[in-house]
Image (cartoon, rainbow, N blue to C red; front, top):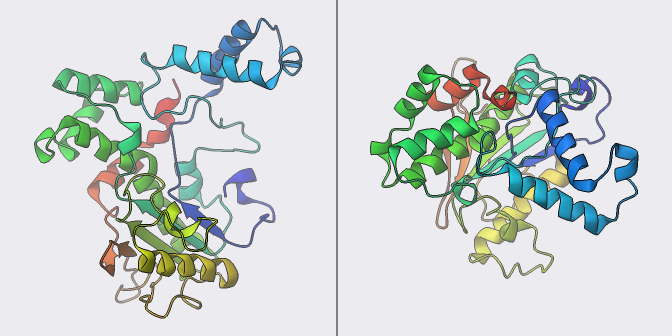
Length: 308
């Protein structure tokens, strides 16, 4: 969506962003270090040599370099290590900057996230010192004032374990808050501010990817979904959006109307309306990510924290 700054004709007519993942991006110097590590393991001196290696060999090299990188700064649990780099051409700026500046494709837009996006990407941390060390690894270069504010917003006392504390802030940083940033940017700067829809999915496993068994199973009976009625509703919301750029026109007969993100506001203001899905209810609620937590992360430009 932000390729080439969104400056040319988009290669798609609409976007369905399923739990979009905004991991910390690396700068040129850190990407160069990754490249040099890979060269050393491959016994190559340049990229041309590496292109002659077998797929199996490259796979082993990739796994080894990642194994060496994790468990020590600056790569924390949940950081995918290899990833995109802002090159000034294809990727011209960090996502939070691109969306603030309107440098993305303006098309009908649907976005969702699951309830516990950070669950599979967080390890158990017990001591207070480990909690801080883990956060410092994920946010290299941040100072005491940042972490003080982070843990004011995500205090240990608010959770039954430090694990769930980590799950919560990781979920917000990497997926949940980005859905808010994208939805409001599309509403403010898109070609049609009413053609934006957002959903919070609190059913199934509730973790990253939880919607998949309810929508994408190649078996039309969707055996992986543990609620067939909900699977039918979800599937037709998505089919409707794919066909008509609107999740409502072809929705299932028993599916509630899904209002646009801007709906519900008064006097020309937007309502930040989000479809909240559970096993037994489908209701409209104000966007939970329209919050002090996401506003803090947005103001900090956290995606640059990976640029050390």
